[in-house]
Image (cartoon, rainbow, N blue to C red; front, side):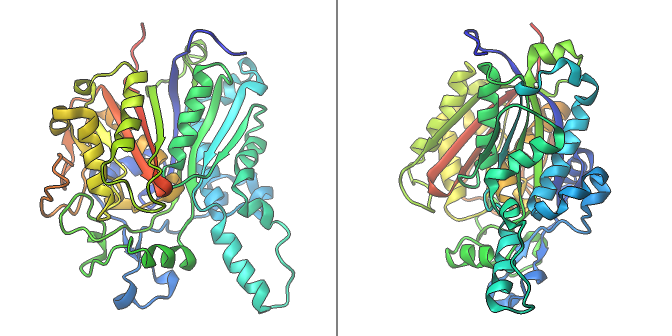
Length: 424
């Protein structure tokens, strides 16, 4: 049923899996402390002096420790989707939907998932093994389920027994923002009443790393590994890899009130654009990136001075950080200089398909706690990145409304606006 009057969409569940830890509380506490999880990716077996292979890996992850009832799914799940199951499970439990399933129509419960690299961690090694004939085994007959991201939303729908739309997104590193934004719009306009949405990825593999290395996008830092990712700092030299997942439960406000759900915040705007400029480099004028921000703000009837914090894409690359800074300044004008921004990639690396969702979850915690986590490793001001990135130390702030900005290869740009919830 589509509604003529747009509905309000609220966040009622949070879940995350990252190098900072599994679970929202551990993740958040470590971010606020400014702890870096970046190290040398010894799993890639590369010459450190030549390649400087940095990343933030999830250590000692055991899927069944977190989803003991999901053993039958293991043959069908890439590691990235295992992260997705665990993050979605936490969000599901956090929202306490289980006790209220009798008041939710199954065909109005959706699943929206974003991933950038899909099942690359499963497909590439197994394909190489098969072609080279190392052990003479047949190809993994479950590989279709592991590799194809189009099936990932369906896997979650099967596990959580939802009957509404299942939508998978795969555009670029802003992809989980697309999943969240499209979920928000579907709830707002009555396509579904409630949904799990977010993103997941396990992109740390030789093929993927070398692709970004050859593009010149990876960090060339030669100091301590913890300092390799340096968003907005003049001495930045590139991104570092990460992995994990972040998920939300979004729902119609009236349903949330009916079941007395805890509300973390309200999504009030979503904007998406494409530069149409270059397949890997952001547009130098940042016009379309700024337009995405303006679209989200316009939908929410927000003025620049209403924005109290921005959770940025902040990759630490030479091109992305200035482009994002310029987009924010074009969208917010002079108020950009009064608005704290931040990049948690400085601590957990670039988690690809999970990145925007993880950074939006961070933004929700900023709204909840009134604390902005630091952008660590900031050493020197860059005139092209001259906004307040909350350098090195967390800070108390007054935050009632925040933006999540994100961009990715192909020129994809998104922005999401979230406010503290206030009942009318």
